[in-house]
Image (tube, rainbow, N blue to C red; front, side, top):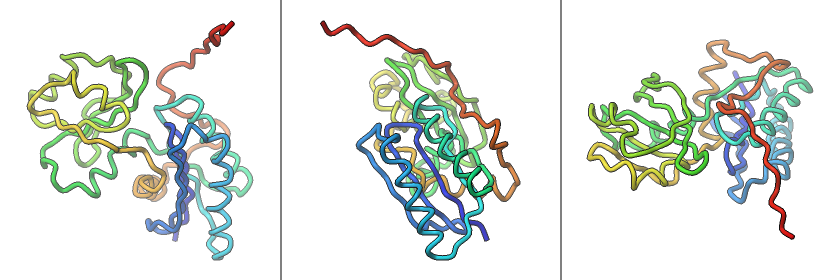
Length: 230
């Protein structure tokens, strides 16, 4: 028996879910972000209160660990670590790019069986955070920050279909003109899609050190001065 609180704050979407033995019990999502600082604590409290009111002991907290928004990842990690400390729970880290791939693997049966999957998180201008996976989430190419141009991902596109999706894919569609490029809209990282990855990590004993865990930012945070409006 396992009960897990799932926290996802890597993009502008704020979402939290509660699962038991791989089944979704409850979830909260906001697409009006970024609003993590305002909403996350309340969402988490609702999930924990649901578990408590149903006498379900929470075993672990899973957090989407990046890459993604520096601020969003820090807020999510801080909330997850605080909940783990307060309730003596296990901490699980779910890679955000793998998380993005889950709904396609679960719900899309119209994609080529031999296709590779390239989730993309928007960075800036023509830059994205991306990785390439096979259908079983075996890593074909590691996570990188890519500046996308006409030749990007050519070595993979020449070998067969590549499915591009996630918040960074839309801006790449006009650039990646290849017959093997497949683009899917409206794929977002959501806490409820973390469930199979978190369950797998818990089952394999892949937990994080609560004291020393840090999200995978991929790039260093660069502070900028606000523009002088006057």
